[in-house]
Amino acid sequence: MVVIDSSTTCADIFNHHVITSGSMIAVRQDAQFLTYQELASRAGAVAEQLRSNGIGQGNIVATLLARSPLGIIVALACWSIGAVYVHINEYEPENRVEALLSIAHADLVVTDNKNENRIGEFVKLNVEKTATRYGQYNPVVGRSPGDIAYLVFTSGSTGTPKVVAIEHYSVLNYFTAFVERIGPLPNSLACTTTFASDLGNTSIFGALLSGRTLQIISHEVVLDAKAFAATIREFSIGLLKCTPSQLEVLATQIDISELLPEKVLILGGEIFPPRLAGAIIQRRPDLTVFNHYGPSETTIGVLMHKISEEDAGREIIPLGSPLSGVEIRLLDKAGKPVRVGETAELYIGGRSLARGYFGDDELTNKRFISIAGERFFASGDLAKETPHGEYLFWGREDRQLKVRGYRIDPLEIENALLADPDVAQAFVISITNNTRYSIELVACIVGTVDITALMQRLQTVLPASHIPSKIYRVDKIPVTVNGKVDMVMLKSMTEKAECERSALVVNQPHTATEKLITEIWREILGLKDIDINAKFMELGGDSFKSLAVFGKLRRHYPQLTIAILFSYPSISALAAYIDASNITLKSTKVVQL
View 1 (cartoon, rainbow, N blue to C red):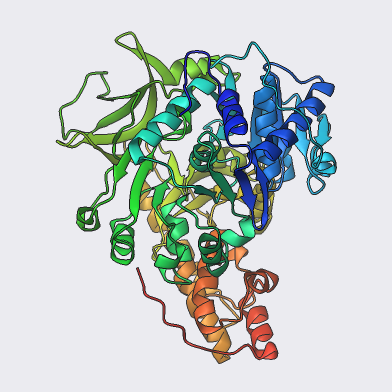
View 2 (view 1 turned 120 degrees about the vertical axis):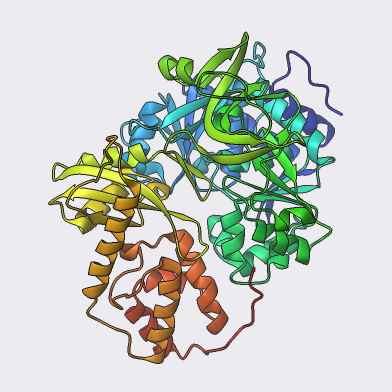
């Protein structure tokens, strides 16, 4: 058992496992793996390269890497020399990559062959070329638990993402409290998301700070339910964390029982639907399942709720009760505590708090406040406390949204829209798709801009999670007598605009294959009529919805691959390929959630 005291950092805990469990597998991706000793040696070599580039205590090292053990190696290297890492999603558009690097004040960008030419003028280090070097992992003297361990980006209302600074102390508190709550960790923990997201840190820290194996599952495998299920089985994944919508959409391809880990499933990042809880319990009553909640500003997660049969019949699944070291307050607008069962803003305090927003003292002082002499984070989430000491999510104080695990401030999207000189007004709303494939973002604009060109420009400045499914042109943004945006009227205007769009559809489906694909697109996209020559992404599709389409098509065409789907982006093109290739039509029974 590792002893964590007032001088311990994450590097010390990892190094303990290198010394005591050096031959154990630390990280694995597909069939490739590194033991703790090998991982430490690789990290030691990278640490030397960082030092050679002038990186030391407190310097910021950004990574722009494909999802692989390299990201873990660089993070560990930074910890050993007292530097701070910040991961950037490799799928970010190039303009945004440079903006994120500037916001984080990156002193150096560590990259690989694939991303080396996307860095711009920043100082860079390609570690893929030297990834097989070995060195000594020697954490430097003088490091403190109060040092920053990593930075993570989160959405900002000004159009500029916020950078949250997390200290080693907070990471270690989360790790110990998490283990205390779920019990002994299984041998293998899976990471299914980009390292740039806080969601995956449960598995990353859970594995590397406990001497277990971190299984990195590639983006391509996560998109293919059969490949994903095969990975779960082949490598005996004991713990899996993902978003509810990710699990639900994979379950459209194969039975959900094949997607579940051996021992522990943790769902977080968005609302946990009771129907999903029921499906999991029905297929795997032996599985331990948790709902997990927490903003990035409070280090990954602060509330956990263990799922039971009762949850399948609830209207709302609880966020849970506080982990050890976490303090929760529900305060009204006057800053006064409310009674059990009353709705108020959720304030989070205790040992899990971030240092604040990196480089933004003003915002830090605004959101991290003092309550009776103790520091708390104003989450902006509305909640109710139950008589059992758990908390229920009850909406937001502001317009902030959670879409497929990503925290999104609509103002960030609106500012990007208004940057176009031909957009006079912009307002972003959320709608619930007619299907169950989560919340969608819809933008309403006033102006003469070409919608297609505007959408293309957004894709160069915003991450994929922030791109609206649809952009509608309206005559004006309606307001109520109180001067607030009239949401009911605005949604009515979008429905009218959608009907007008549907009336313009020219190319209708004719062949049996075209009709089948069109019906699936209609369901997933929530559209009445679709032009078979229109591209999926132009109609409000994204990679997430593509996965849902793939799951439904694969029931009829088992030979279909996700690569084929992406290669033929219109109904007409995909149908022509299927018919010309003589892909067998087959009905495959899949149990619905």
